[in-house]
Image 1 (tube, helix red, strand yellow):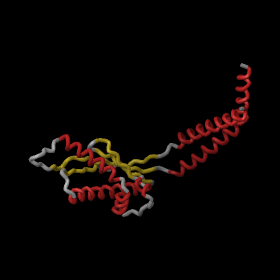
Image 2 (tube, one colour):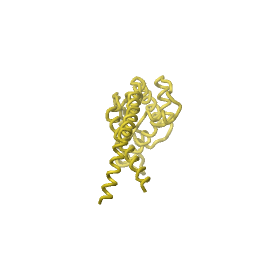
Image 3 (cartoon, helix red, strand yellow):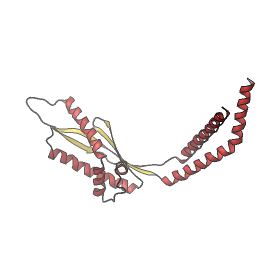
Image 4 (cartoon, one colour):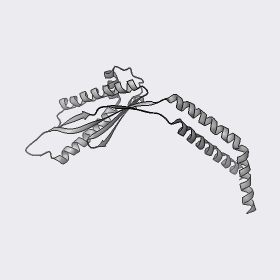
Length: 208
């Protein structure tokens, strides 16, 4: 029992001795994170959706394209359209259509600006992000024109069994900002606990 108390007392005194250094380290890292967050600035987002429906379907005597398969075909086309919008060549074409200069030639950086998620069998939610509101809105307009043209080409050049109707909703612009106080406080606590555990771990290894 006395050994346990002595061991606890030893570690407690160690923590008290190292407390100024732990606090200074945590404060310094939190300060760096604060400066970084303040420099990042807000991110502008433009949101719109695509509603997809079946426009035409081939009728043949041997087979009747019923409602179940029509919905399944629409679901698959929506998934294809969502992935299609996030390909580098489509994003580049949207930049060109909007009269914007490419901000990067890195495919990952380009495609990161466009997020398209199929949230329902006939619904795709699209988000276009950029640090500039003007660029985000112009890129969105260019993307909508490019995708309308691509869908038309898909129907014109192929021989699809079904023809889809793709309707875009009115875009809405928003802005998101990083919460500096929350991030700084979380960073301070994380670094402090990590450093504290590091000190105790190193001391435990020494005593062993």
